[in-house]
Length: 91
Length: 378
Ligand code: SF4
Ligand code: SF4
Image 1 (tube, chains in turn yellow, orange):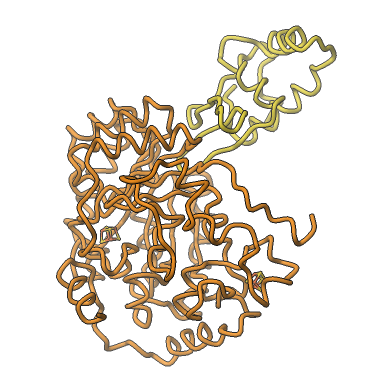
Image 2 (cartoon, each protein chain N blue to C red):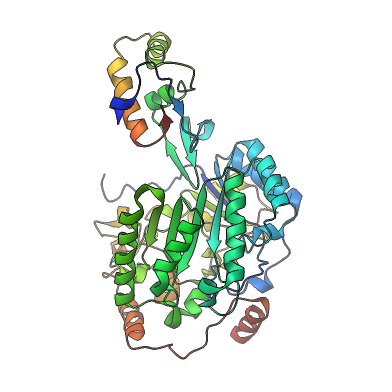
């Protein structure tokens, strides 16, 4: 599945889901017909950057800058694979 | 987690179910509306509902379902959907499709409606008709096309019972033909009107097994084209469902007259006062009211639930079913085979096998019957 994704792909939240910040839950959530997935903090931070305009390396760089961290590429790649399998993101 | 750790303090009411009206053009014998619906008080006004939406959203609600009766009968539906959308709700409409014209579909789309769940319901009193009845099929076909044209996901629901379960293949074919992406085949659960008709509606074990087999065959045949969910009637289980995911845990139902409930049938429970949204704000209802606090946590449990190692899994099952069958809302759900009243469920299944109810006419949901039943009870 992930093998088919181009290196310069810009992942974006799938049309089947709506990503939104929920103050009452202090979390990003994915909404879909009659259901909801509550994302943990790192998943939320990755997903909110999946806006169809950034490549995966750009998302990683942005996260590393925002959180003063380095070496996040593997974690991001792993999450994106899971997110694709769940059809949360396209591309 | 230890067995004593079920928290009594809930999170926000994530799910708001707005039952806009009990009016309905249909007469389903399995209707989940209360049997006494016709004696319910006046419907909330548009302004009341707008206030409820704002209060619920402020309290953390995020999924909003508009149901009924038939919610299309409220001509302010578009106004309510627009406000819910503006507030950031994910909006769901649960409808039989009657009254969903091209104009209204376009208005609902413009208002920001996210999702429609279209139910196959019986539009006539001839139950078998609904499969062969061209008017029903034409209606669903028209509405299904509207759903597609407006870019909504195509989600269908069909309540299954003894009288249609043997036609499950045709129901699935029909859903495929209508372009459904999701199909929920939900066996009737035995509350309200369905309880009155239980002897006629509960399928036999053989019917149920066949239906599950057929459903699996179709899953293989169609793969990703249509996702089919099959919900077994809980009478055929030995452990109860975790009803509403826990009492007052995530679900808040507001009935047409403004009564706030932890589930749409809870009003039947004795000795409980449920607040009305005309008199109390949603936050106070959710966190402070006696009705919502009564069966939270596990402090209310009796044996065998109190010391049961599985109590976190199902929280003792459904309070309404415990009351309807065992006569005590704090008892274990009789679906559980540890319940002293489990024999009642076994007996109901035995009655089905012995053909009880075969020649008994169905009681159809309509206002006149509702009033007659209320008069007969008092
Ligand atoms: S179950 Fe049938 S009768 Fe009851 S509200 Fe729904 S469509 Fe109307
Ligand atoms: S005894 Fe009560 S808690 Fe235990 S499984 Fe049965 S219903 Fe659930």
